[in-house]
Length: 462
Image: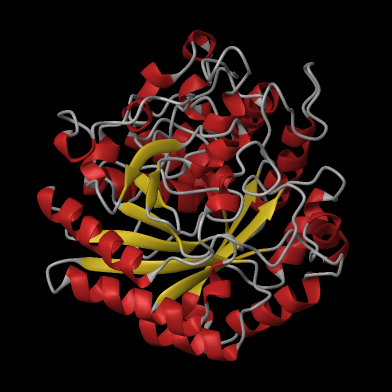
């Protein structure tokens, strides 16, 4: 790392340094400094938010979480197990309302990677599972004195469940929560089924909407085609034109795009900007040391860092911040002394849980990219409280901060910013997850570049 005033670990920077950076930095940097100061003033711990290849919707508040170490740890003894003292309760609940999808994305961890458990699950979450899930959510929140939480409607493609079923689910969970608990709802969709009727229902129920699309038609068609080979892009664009219009824009949560080395990074970013999203989240394609992602060779080359650095330069240098770019903003905030709100970087404790269509509880569904059963807990909302999941070794490991890192990462000068990367990306068959990320060279270079650019803002007054 460069010898700069900007820290490589999330420790608070002095006010005079932040003031200097704010005076001389870009508008993006000033927004990041404002966030760091607001979080410090709130004096509340930041929790890593849900994020995966088809999800990652930022819901109405800025507190939630997720993560996991992984492996087929033995199931916890259900309702008889209480979480250890000091463990952060779940504040975000990801409901797999439909287990199938109407696209055939070639990078999808649910259908194209190691864990094929989707094949044995019901297509749709039943009314009984919805009710039991709602009861468990309320039980968990009340037992920990929590009055606000987020619910993400996920899949598969959640809109395959239909508008009426989704409306009934939200109504039932809200009824069960009662006046003492506020639930905020969001949905992550590929957009192909998102029409005006669906958006009207979302508007009535205050459900925020995130859409997955990789850029222009060429970029999207490279990976996000329909099962018959047809393009999903025109339908996604029609949905985004509606969602970004004045009537539905308050529902717009942001866009999710997977990094594709074959796509020009600036073109991808600027294409997504045409929809004026409040946030863009670029995700690294899932891969492991055993099954590396495309272009990630076992050497010191940094193709993904180079791609993201090009986006960073375009985003960071804009006269006015055009949108949030989630991963880049999280790195910037960490370097400024703040805490991460994403599971992909930083060491914030993670606090979300996944419920499958059959009621089974999982802690990190992205672990499906590693091996069959990696994310399973052996628990179900039909028989077990969420506290039992919170006591699971995977959940406990996700809240251990620097202790959850490999020995190599703990010695790394950017380890507390990188946080070891997304947990599934550390997997190596025969060695488990006690490794750096398969993206280690990319993450190091990207963080070093962002730190250098930020430090340059402080140096301009020297």
